[in-house]
Image (cartoon, rainbow, N blue to C red):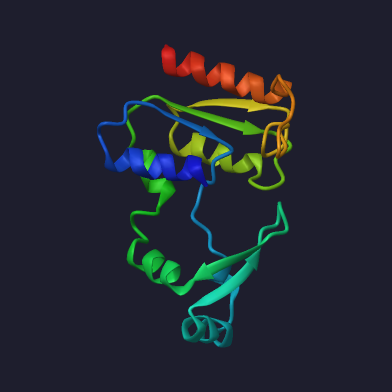
Length: 155
C-alpha cells in the first residue's frame, strides 16, 4: 500500500517534489467491504477481527479503530482524486505478472495522471524478491526498478 499512500501524502504536502511508486494500489479497498452486518457488529463488540493476507497467508488482526479512522478519512484516502491533483513528476513502477496488485491498477493511475511515467517490468508484486533475501545481488526485475527509480529521482 506504500505507493498509494505516497500519492495520498504528496497531494497533501507541497514539500514532496517527486513520487515513485512500486506496485501501487489505485484505491483504498477494505476487507470489511464485503462483511455482513452480523460480522461488523461482532467486530465492533470484540474490537478486533482477522483477515488472511492473500499473498503471505498470514492471519492479520484488524482493530475496530481502523474502521472508524477509515470512515472519518474517506476523502483523504481517495487515490484517484489525489493523483489527479498532483503537478509533480511521478514514476509508476509495476510488475506485469503482479497477482497481488494487478497491472491494471498502474494503468488506472497513469490514466488519471497522464503526466506520470509508467515503467513496467515482467515480474511479480515484489519484483522477484523473497524474504529473507540471502543473495548478494538483486533479481533482474528489482534491479531494473531500482535503477529506473534512481535515474528518475536524480534526473
